[in-house]
Amino acid sequence: MNAPPDPAGRLAGEIAAPPTDHTDAPEPSQILFGTQEPPPFPELNIFPIEWETETPKLIELYDKSRDPGWSPNRLPWETLKAEDFTADQRYAIAYWFTLLSVFDSSGPAVFARAMIHTYETHEEDPLRKCFFSVTRDEVNHEEICQRAITTLTPGGPLRNTPETALGKLAQNNAKWYYHNGARYWEGFKNGIGRYPLPILFTSFLMGELAAATLFHGMHQRTTIPVFKEAFRCVGQDEARHMGICMTVLRKLLPALEEAQKATITKQLRAGYVFLSGILYEPPDQFWELPATFRPAHRLLEEKAREAGLGILSDEERRENWRGAVLKMKGVLEKYGIAFPAIPEIGVDGETVAFDPDDIIPVF
Ligand SMILES: [Fe+2]
Ligand SMILES: [Fe+2]
Image (cartoon, rainbow, N blue to C red; front, top):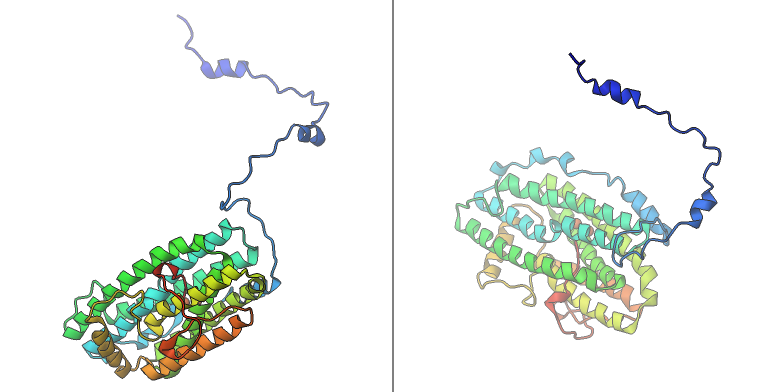
C-alpha cells in the first residue's frame, strides 16, 4: 500500500533559499533615469494637494477658530420649558427658528460645498482650513435651530401637528420658506463654480454681516436665557466669519477687473433681497410666497416677540440693516465698486437688474 500523499512535506522539500548575491545595490540615479512624469492633473481636481500660505493672517484667524469657546450641548437647554409658553407662543418661536434655519441650517451644506470648491481650485491651505472651521460653526448654528424647534414643537417644523390656527399658518409659511430655500440651494450649487473668488467672497461677506447684525440685536433684546446665550455665541462666530471674508477681500479686491466690479454690484443687490428674508421682510423679488404669507408672518412675529424671543421692531430692523449695508458700502467703494440702490432701507446707489440665479450669500 502506498503512503498517503504529503503535500506539505513535498512543498517543504521544494523550498529554495533566496539569492543572496546582491552585490550591486540599485543606484537611485539609475532608477531615476527610467522614470516618467504622470499625465497632467485634471483641472478642478483636488489633487495635487499642497500646503501653500499666501495670507499669514488667515493662519491666525484659523488658530483663533480652532476652539470656538462654546458648544450647543453646553447651553442651558433645561431652562427652556415648553410648558412656560402658550401653544401659539411655542408655534411662533419655533416658526422664527424655522425661518432662521433656511439661512443657518443650510450653512453646513453650503460651506461644505464651498470648502470642496477651495480644494478643487487649489486655494491656499489656511483658506481651506478657514472654510472647514466655518462649516463646523454652521453645524453648531444649525443645532441651535434644531434644539429650539424640537423642544417647543416636537417633530417640527413639518412633522408636528399644530392645534391652533396660528400654528397651522406657521407650518404653511414654513413650507413656503423651505420652497424658497430649495431654490436658493439650486442657485448656490451652480454659482459656486461660475463665479471667481472675489465675487463669492463679497456675497459671503454680506451674509456674515447680516448674520452678525441679527444676532447682536437679538442677544440684547431676548428675555429667554438660553437664547440670550445662544445668540451671543452665534454672533461671535459670525463676527469671526466676517473677519475671514474681510481678510480675503483685502487681498482680492485691489486686483479686480471692471467686469467683476459690475458683477459684484449686482450680487450685492441679490444678497440684500435674499437676506432680507430673515433680517427685515422678504421682498417680492426672488421670494415666491402666497398671499397669506405676509399677514401670517406678522402675526407670528408679534406672538414670538410677546413671548420674549427678542425680535426687533420693523423700524429697528430697518435701521440695523441699513447701518450694516452702509458699512459694507464704505468698504467696497474704496475699491471702486459701485453700490446698488436699496431704496427699501433708504440706501441710494446704482439701479441694477435682479436675477434670482445670482443669489449666493451664506450666513
Ligand atoms: Fe456665518
Ligand atoms: Fe451661521
